Amino acid sequence: MEKQIVKILPFFEARIWGGKRMLETFNYQTDIYPVGEVYNVVALPGAADCSVAGTDWTLSQLYRECPDWFACNTAELPIRVNLLDPLADLSVQLHPDDAYALKHDHSRGKPEAWVILDTPADGKIEFGHHARTKEEFAKWARAGDWGRLLKYLPAKKDHFIDIPAGTLHAINRDVLTYNISRNADLTYRLYDYGRIDPNTGEERELHIEKVLENVLVPDNSEGFIWIEPYQKDGCEITDYWDEPGLYSLSRIKTTEQGTYHHEHFAFITIVEGEGRVNEIAVTKGETILVPDGINRLAITGTLDMFVASYKNEEG
Image (cartoon, rainbow, N blue to C red; front, side, top):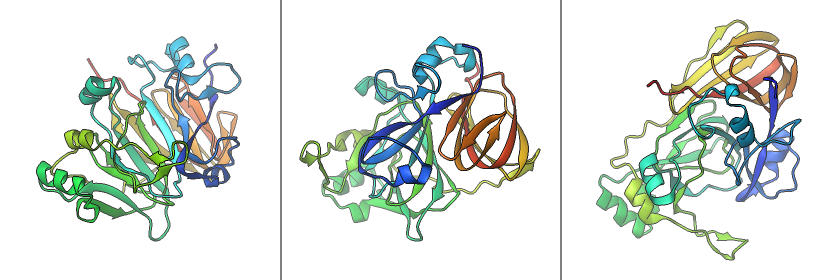
């Protein structure tokens, strides 16, 4: 297939804490209910895998058949993007590092990061913990002493938060987030509020011992940070993260028109507005893939969008 900008269709996941609001917020259409997560970019063959608009290919097939579109040295697409707007608190959880994930679950670890798109005045997230030692963490966790163990932070709109492997975390009710992570899907739950899964009639599985083996103690998590945007070529740009071998993330806002230059492939997800990117019409909720080698983007319209990409590790 000729190298070109293409639209990536969202992949929807039903979640116990989901509903219709995500569909209404981003004008999505699906029969899946209750929608909790929208994967704007995911390529897990045989599992969650976005479709490429105008083709009969999935994103993982495109990655396999057109490697020059990505110029990555990884066997699978290395990054994942999703939007979350939970109607109830997510489970308190963490993701392991690569070594542990491969050894115990034949998977990869899943470091991730969030940008808060919207939050109510009382919005919060669970992030980190108060235990000073592994023994103290285990004691409080096994006793269900969550008030003593878990640490909560007020959610801060437009702020960025980095979540390394081993960091305890949970997005709480009504906090709308844009998430970027490694293209993996391995989660260990510590606490799920005793909720009953309507599909099984039982509480969802917990992974307390695996959490104990992976949680970072002491907790030195940084929490939310504000990254100052800058103006360039008609764009307001915020560069959140740029780590070879993990992911790169920026945000672009335009009011009329601008030009954006980048060196690698990019998945661009529009979270507000409508307009055009290199003559491709885009609107809120859509994601486009800009292949490697298309380095100049002419943007028109009032748009707020995230640019997710990946750089190979040197050597």
